[in-house]
Image (cartoon, rainbow, N blue to C red):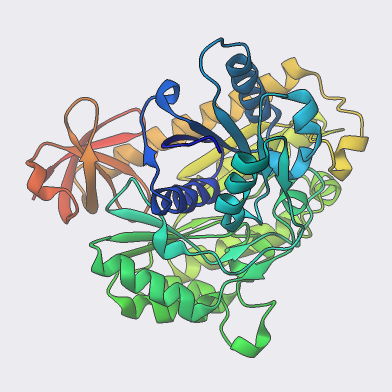
Length: 435
């Protein structure tokens, strides 16, 4: 049996992948392995991958292919995450230097897979369709000691036509509420100040287990009593945002007044083609309700430009709604066809240069709106969780609306929530001083 003593983990993609990596790191440390900060010193390399966009996949394929051309010592290489689920056995033929493929529903099998690789060699694959609910999240080794991701629901049942996630993460599976409470209480005891509840659609929490009598807003009320200072959540599907959730965000002091609320497109025809199951009018009604009940709420969104058959007029509809809603945070992408999704069968007929023009128009609008919003914040006081020092040696943190803020101060402030008066800004970062 080959002996492995050290490992290195590459993490691509979303916050869920970051948490999965932390869980796997915890498992490997329990095994007695040492995590190193140099890939060349590791006996084991794990690539925790993303399939949402083609660029993410190409980065992984290129990096592993490059490793295969090295003449240095033999390393065990494994591919986990969404690429493992979308490509499965084909990864072995495309990347013959990898030893194992581990799916998103199998991260608890990591040690067993390593034993098989070490004892038998060859190619080992575990990619179950259904999610096992026995993940030991308490053993996760998180690099950040102030903020933590907490998984509450995995998978997605919405099946948007462009999205690979339902095929790589599977159907929605809620995590038992007591397990979530136990983890958050443990994190509070460990000194964590902020948790972010994760799910492809957190608003669906508990719907698959009606016997629990605990939907997402019920979970928030229970978590608010744990003593955690801040609660965030990602991501929300517009259809599932109900008034009970909005009222919970308003009423619970620990819940940040920020809702990531992906619009994706502003044309009803494109929304139907995306299978978003709401109209732009219904989306705007939810925005209006959020702002009526929580007047100071900040909104985030995701936008795809250049979806197949999108016309200039339909893009303009997206632009107009984007402008009206004045999002605090926006993740804007050009459409990327993903093999295995319904949209992959359609002609990707919007030229790349037109996609890029539309992308830049929305990015410029978002930048302009951020500048105007930050101008209005000059002289205001905001509560900031101080997280760490940045590369310029300023203390860096965020307020509850997810605005980035930097200040001068001592390291003793790290991990505390401080009142900060804003006096200027640089791009999308607010600059202030302690009150």
